[in-house]
Length: 434
Ligand code: LLP
Image 1 (cartoon, rainbow, N blue to C red):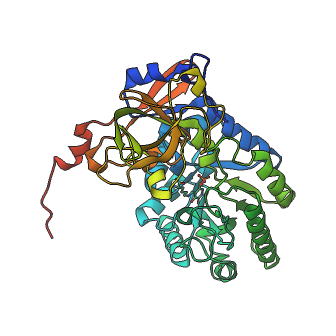
Image 2 (spheres, helix red, strand yellow):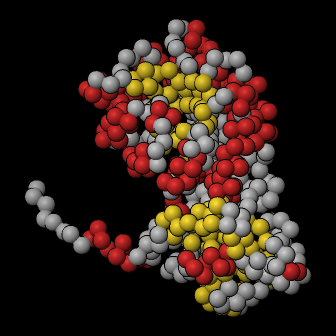
């Protein structure tokens, strides 16, 4: 569900803003976000789980512009951060720091100190060594903090890409259930880092509620056992991973997840935390890119655009599907849905590729698309999550601007990078005494 739609004039709009007109103003490539879509998805997931009065910690890693963080925080969201940089973003955006959970396997001492200083809600703890370090730093600072032990429940959605599954035993995340028991024996009464919660995150995206049910049931058994042994467990963080509609109607509804999960957690005396990123951000953003050249090679048609793997790496990295379609169309090409297979008469098999000097620089492969010409504007849909945040300067390409649309108003919330931005950090050099 989103507010990117074609109107009868064959033109694509974000809310009430015509995207061709917007691109003419702000240039390409550019990420465009719809405020209404962000709000809709946040409200929908919060609404579906409302009975549990959960804390929804938006996963900043999915789309971390401070203006996006702020608009969600203003609606009541907490934040899931994984670095000092994300914590910095959350603080700049005015997030209530007690609603921040901090995950990640490699937190540095400086990052841990910053988290304790900020008074975050929980550190999601990934290993014994990390726990000892956090507890040591908290003792040194004289400021106790709270920890949620990340438990790896050994479940995974078979449809999740190997690179983004995290709930299986052999990933680097968390500890298995048996080790969790020993973990509490060793650290469950530590006064510097109070281990009072369990954290799960089984992968992303998870296209069915079933793996959550399996994982939560395992966590609940563990919690009951721990409570029986006298440990206080007051929160369960069930992580993120809820799917988004890369193709129309493919992801479960929020109520599908909630109908399966809420009954498990009702009346358990646990503060429930969710960490959704993709499901809120993905459909709320698109990448607009302009066709530079059309090249026919053998039986193939290459559409070469001014964006690529350096701005949206998901197709190159995970073979991810993003629907791509021109922003203005003959009426016969209006897409009634977004899907891998499109069947309008007159479509051509097309590869959409970028300017980067790598064969892997692909946005779409062998896609049925309307004929496009040099100068046309293409929309890469469902690019709000893991788009701009994973963009790089490879081949010394400046990163795109970001624009937030609210009704008929468009605001540049991150200016386009310049060549000076590319080299500024290299202009002041200094010799290091060793
Ligand atoms: N919580 C933790 C501990 C996570 O590691 C993640 C994502 C999330 C929450 C949010 O998951 P979400 O709700 O967004 O699915 N770059 C990949 C996705 C990597 C996900 C990393 N962890 C992609 O483009 O598909």
